[in-house]
Length: 384
Ligand SMILES: Cc1ncc(COP(=O)(O)O)c(C=O)c1O
Image (tube, rainbow, N blue to C red; front, side):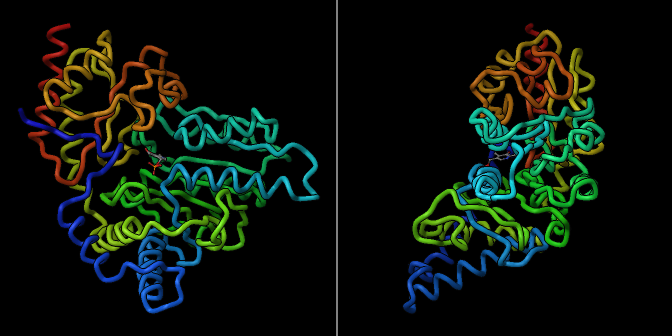
């Protein structure tokens, strides 16, 4: 059976060459970067080289980049770490207000809702437009005197739609400069220009290596110098005392290598735009196919859609039986079976939000792959 992997937004598998390179680098030293002897110093050099490489993708300095276990942890550190520190501020009187968009990943939504349910913050979730971007007017209108934190996703993991993050950051800061603006840059890093971040007013941003062909279990938080957080994990004092624990050396070496490769060929993913666009053009010919969001402003590899009157579960079963790997929602919630809050936030019905499919291509995807996926859809439509 032909196998087609088109779930690169869930995870972007490492190439064999990359795995070999990580192993080669790791064989140079197995020291603990916190040790002061020769082996430790070698490991520390390796760690700092990787940090510099990843920081370059953010156009930022090494000092502003913290390694974490992934973007889920980075998002939690940004949000919980901010409010942990804020709660100790003697000047803070009102209940602080946080704004998130309806397009956020659960690693943003859930810590925010948890803090709200604990009574620590008040929370506003601003809707998306039908094109899939955050409703800018609603976002700016939601800012009050108590607003201290705003979180915006750069590019949606579900629809691929891109927010004008730099412009939004400027406008939020114009309205209230003291607001901490955080951005989930997970699906954007390595796919869009993120080099503006280090010299922008953005306070923090999260990313993850396994979305760009690196190992799983390693991510990072960019933290603008001067933006303060409290640690969630304490102990050894690593990562500027903001994330204790011996560093994941193979993970961060992998992240650094991928960052270096992407910086050397920033158009590495552009080829799959042709595959995605071919897929979309053909998909539009299938009766009942409906594509979500404005693909003129989307990641080059992603498309999210539903087929009228055809259950997502039926489609997913057909895909699986025919060797096609795609997703029925965000990777972290697939299988859970609850409607996509992102699609609901764009104004789609609960049925659509439950029965949609995400196809996400990678650099090695071919038009042949997209034809295979289309054939399975046609077969499912024919049989419904
Ligand atoms: C937009 C977005 N944010 C955060 C995450 C969480 O990343 P990680 O798997 O590194 O915890 C994901 C993963 O699917 C994502 O797509």
